[in-house]
Image (cartoon, rainbow, N blue to C red; front, side, top):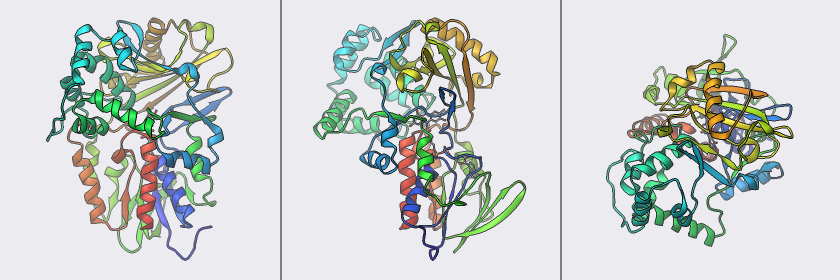
Length: 455
Ligand SMILES: Cc1cc2nc3c(=O)[nH]c(=O)nc-3n(C[C@H](O)[C@H](O)[C@H](O)COP(=O)(O)OP(=O)(O)OC[C@H]3O[C@@H](n4cnc5c(N)ncnc54)[C@H](O)[C@@H]3O)c2cc1C
């Protein structure tokens, strides 16, 4: 039960960040109003069941990377609903010369792998001996990795990995901001390989899994934002609500509209959990203090979910999926083997693939009509996985501005966010624009936003 004596808190944006903030505040008996532009919660988390197919149009999995998440899932009674990767999803494939090669997961596997030449293997061995080298200035991620391991590792390991997380361009992404762990390992150990090994040893010594597990739920990731919003009282969430103006003060006044009708409400605190484009256009006190965020680069991505009878796919699909390096000159960035990864994604004797296309390097592909794009995708799937015939089920979703690129120089956007908070007491911002492209990071950000509102 919320306490009606205390003034309400507004949360704008009903993605995972906004839902997490609403949940935490409601738990603390605070009255919340959650304004969401669309008619559903979850933002880019969009799981859709269609018969026995389960389509994830946005993220396919999240990292259970903290004890807080584990505790939360129990609290939300989602632990019994949780899906872990199936045992046969053990490989992570990379494509080289049109062949799928399992990514090496240990130094011994690297030595035996067909992914790298002898020269690169020698560089990998030598990298172990590097001493910490303090870097003052940021540099592109590709530059950092090239410095440690050479170009072959950039082409066949870093670039596909970057496609999988940011759909980005490693020649532009910031080494310091896009993958802060790499930056920190270099500062601490010098050698990234030694650093990884030390982190893995430390995690195991403390009983923590390394790497942290990828998870989903029986009915897809959307179960999480739904469960977070479930305890909210009726009327707390306004769907189809476009927040247009904020008027700072005590109280804050928020003007929002639906179906052309505007309303104004008063709040003690305002939490913004919005994408960059929405923040850039938001009027706060008659100005647009976050206009600079209009220049945040986004990688457009098309996600294509395809279902096939099992016999139409020659490859055993014994993996999490495959990533396709840009040097391979194919149309697709990669594919998740969705029905191998988690149970209940496809009917019996069928398989499901989630193919990603476009990204920072091939944005034009996201503009193709679905049938033309499918022609390109089918060609790649035939050559790489031995897929024959037409899919029996297909869904197509374009994300044009949902994956902000933490490129070199992104600090200026983070500074604009911080300045806006400093200039406006009781206004707090969080979400993927600030935390990066990760469900678990945004979940944690939502809780932090709530804690700031409670302070
Ligand atoms: C294709 C894709 C694949 C991904 N894959 C993974 C993955 O496998 N694993 C992983 O961990 N992460 C993944 N991510 C990243 C992760 O999903 C996101 O970083 C995270 O879900 C973002 O949550 P958010 O709440 O910050 O923002 P969003 O989900 O964008 O939510 C913002 C909300 O604000 C609403 N809104 C916008 N304007 C207004 C307005 N004016 N008024 C009111 N509401 C408004 C929007 O409708 C939306 O619901 C992926 C992202 C994409 C796009």
